[in-house]
Image (cartoon, rainbow, N blue to C red; front, side, top):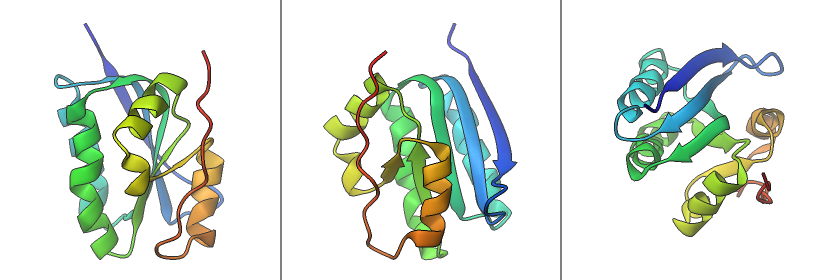
Length: 133
């Protein structure tokens, strides 16, 4: 059975940024929990969001769809959603789906957090090299 563990934090360096740390597998059985976690932040008016995917071994199309479906509302409210710390296999799918044209990704959570202070609208994120496991 595939499990998911989700936790929230505010970035010490920038308290306007919320970090959702995800561990496990994001698939059809667990994606609803991730979606509800993201929607909970949006209801609280938290629109600068980093998703820490360092502990995620697999993301299905249902999981990727969550990020894409919420990005419009997030950006309409002046925020952004950025992905961080993807392992090589997850990043390869991210690239294959060409999501780098929609979402910024960063090697580390810290880089993603700092990008909120540096990023101008339309600016693309840093290129990430896939991590070999």
